[in-house]
Amino acid sequence: MPVLLILIIVIVLFLFFKRSKNSKKPDVPPEQRQPAASEGIAVRGADGKEYIVPRSAQDAYSLYQAASMDSVYGFLCALHCVSRYYEVFQSVPNGFQASATEPRKDADRFFDACEFVALAYAGGIEGVCEQDDAKAVHYYEILLEVCMSVLNRKRFKSEDDHYIFLCWEKLADAYSTGRGCTPNHEKAKEYYKYAVASAMGEGSDDAENDVPKQTRIIGNLLAGYPRPTAIYAPLAMRFATEMVKRGNVEGAALVEDYLNGVKPIGEEKLGLDPKQDFALYYKAAKEDGSPYACYRLALCYLTGAGTVRNEAAGRQLMRAAAEAGELFAAEWLASEENEEQAKWQGAVRSIRDALRAHLAVMQGVTGVELPKPPRVTIDLPEEEEEEEAFKSRQSEEGPCDEYKKTRDLSRLPSIVFDDGNNRWQRVGIYGSQAVYHNDDGQEITIFHAEISRSSALTNVGTLHWY
Image 1 (tube, one colour):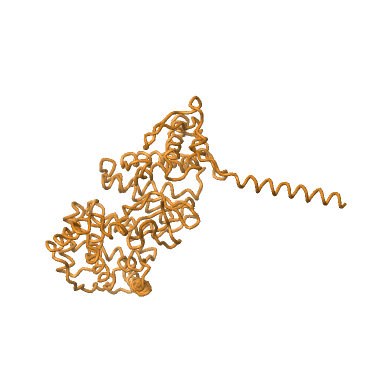
Image 2: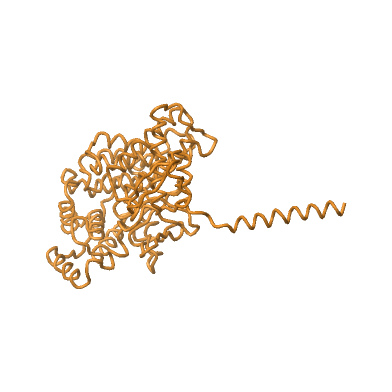
């Protein structure tokens, strides 16, 4: 008995030390695991260097997975993986391996790699690939094509819903704005309908009613340039009305933005030119005291859309809009971590409570009319004086002022990491916010005010990039 016990202890200790020894071995970078030239394909990266990627799509995928997100070689492996798998799919669509239960089949690898390539081209990764909207559209198109084929064979994984939603939304954005493709409003509206239906949980027994996604899409359709508002406002109201029927206060807020903001300004005038949008918002804010116009004008000043950047004016207008009951202005302010955050979080709760009463009116429960929003009284900067002041500041401080360095969403990379070093990929930039999702399909939103030089505060903690 003692001999047997000693033998067991020796074996356990041997396995423990062997495991410890192996765990200390440094991982070999994928760049050092390239196949021989005779066993792979030579490709040139953005850095001008020549690399050898494996011929096998599965081997290329493995190296892409092992590489960092800013790796030239990792991007080239992902690109080759997508190309090879798509060739297989085109030749034998029904033979493309997919499973609703088994992990890492051909379809899973293709979905992952193709999404990364599309997002990389959409946003660009410094030193890895340049931004190319046309290529981004191409890869979203083929990702959607393969996803729909797999879905139609009823072998689609429910947790992969975000792939199809991502394609529908990104392609709708592209065709509605002409970014990377020829504008096609009918096709864009069709994709938007699919995306919103998916966000509302239609067509799936276990899908959730994703209100933030619905709100983001509808808000963009009403936001003016680069989409002609007259074409997309009716669709936006159809979506918002459905949200009202479902009892979502965000739907009520969007309906009121249209009725009290967009419609009085003139939807036929909005979305044609950024400077014209700015002028229309400016006029409505100054002459009519429109809370919605103040909110949109604030975003124009904060992002430099149709005008010069002016953070002070933008923040002043955002506060005025929030104080007048504009939900999305209050949420923007409540997202900032400062001494007034609790105040604006309370304002959001109060506005949402008021909107619940408005919901009852919209649903025909109370039989009373909706209240008109209060008139905003605010001193707006004179445009000529503001532009001269901006030019003066630029000449004194240089082109990279503090706002541009710390607030501009265009600085955000396609890939960021959380405190656990898990990656989050950018879905898109929508006005004053950027949306990212992780490999599990979870989404977070980053606002202008949350960005520091190489990190951003979000509801999941601090995200950082290199």
